[in-house]
Length: 300
Image 1 (cartoon, rainbow, N blue to C red):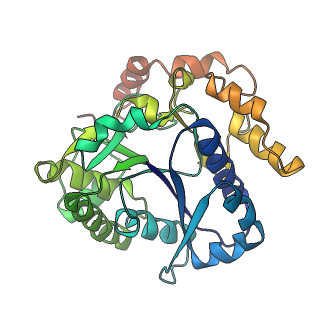
Image 2: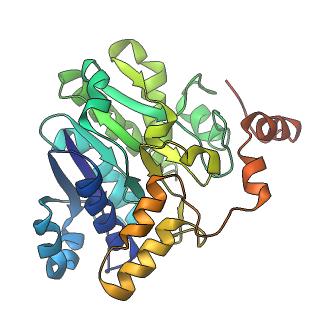
């Protein structure tokens, strides 16, 4: 099993630190075979002075040409929506703001009969399963069906080494360009359109939420998590998270604080005890009922 990441940067920043931390944690806390990073040509130059750190833990860089997009999000999604076409063999993709703390090859044996596997989406405002309405106008413009019975998060994805997986990824890239032309650079709408409207073409598997534990949605999700996934805004995770503390410690000392990693591994993803509101927010049926009452969301 291989781990794959995507990095785009115009300067050395916290995303570069998050990438190294996640790669290092993946190397120490899992039994993966190799790690590959797909990165833009610009990011490759930026990481050149730090490349030896990655090479020491067996990370391979693959530079990818990107169009001259004005923003980094477009560059990132240009690579991300093609990853299955750029990497050999089966692999597990992780966003750089993840910590793979408890995942092993045997955990993914059941995925090997699939072309694609991922977790249902829960973001920092919606700890329950949902299908978003904030891109409804775009879906209608493109003639895509919505709401969807299943809406997946693209932060952690298993890709099988199959022709069908290649076809799915190529379709994702084509549809992402359609949403980008309408001003939506995010990759999840196009991915979920394909997964829901053409599910008969592919062998799809829904992973348990522990493989993509979106802890900003709810502290409950950190319990027995395989892969912790933090919410990054303005280039940094939330201040009260262990990932924020890991980045600060790494920037100050050049070393990873393994006590913080062990804390995260045992479910302690908050640097200070979370407020009662965070726990209540994580009670999914209450939050969902509130959003229904306020007409803030469309549900399958």
